[in-house]
Image 1 (tube, rainbow, N blue to C red):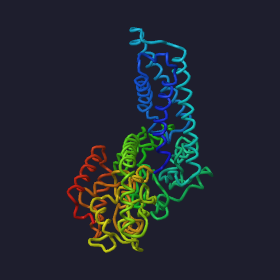
Image 2: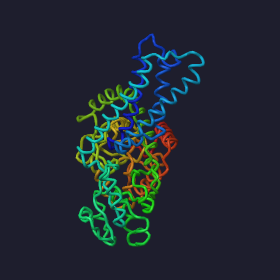
Image 3: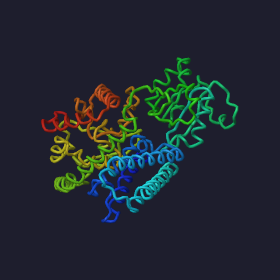
Image 4: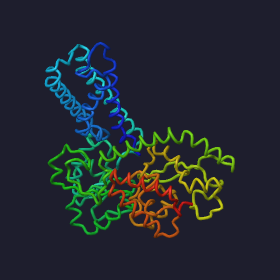
Length: 464
């Protein structure tokens, strides 16, 4: 998972921490606003301040909005916060003589909060820039298809750093660019668009809607973009020309049309899901894995030689490889990274049979969730060899890589788990994964978790 996309969460919790510290640092004899309790005052101020910033999308868009625009939003939100506090003071506090408007209170409201929150944002902006420039592989690479006017507008956004996480790798256009800068980025005419070369290492394809409608051959090419992990967005160019300050964002006012609905592309949904993952994974790691790992580890060691954990390279979000953790349920063998477990598999140990039957072998993956490699609910991550094979055999297979893989998923609770004996089995699993990606809600995740627990209690015949 891209680290800079999680910065908004850190900014959110930092704001809460700053306000709580400020409330508790005010001298004991001073009364804070009209609340006697420091805890109540801290909750009130942090809820109001963070609520305003959340409503104005500071946290959800922090990782991509350029610094001057962020400064304007920060100042505007602080002014709204102060005005609301003063309004409440005037309407409630003054009438009941609850407020002691001391110098400490004024310092807290007009110096401490704006200074500390501004410094924290500056710090996270520097962190964001370091994450971007230290690892260019984290940039979203754009390929543009359309006229040079469209390319010029997008290039201006990129060079002004308004789209800080994006990089233009080239464009296709039937028009000859006059500027030398653009000439070097031109990859050919519209008819020259090819899948293998054009889509390699490209994350997003921005295509003019008019260009797409006028070129039937281009339509065929772009329909296969998903197999190469390239998301297609169609841009209404006339609107784009008149709105040069817009951000590249599905939540913005730019009319971009995608080939599919993806709720987790919405930053609010992504942040909510990630926050739930962090909270639940933290609790499981502290309350369950802290004692489960030593006990299971001892049983594994007593039965067979080898490590406690089975660490396997698997493909996840954006087809990035990561180390997936499991309790080792087999004897150490050379086929573990290539051959799926089968029924009555001789490689499985006695303790391994119990672990796999109860799904306890998957429990260490809550560590992967906390690291950001996985989610609690999502498409199951596959072995690297399987991803390479099935991506060539099954249409839209790579679409499932658009979101974080999960410990459990919609395909698993619908019966598509375990060994895939036929290609049709994998194709059916992929269909369920894509359905989940296009229909995600918090309630769907809760439903999947409940169904997974029911399966574990009842026993799944495919769990072996």
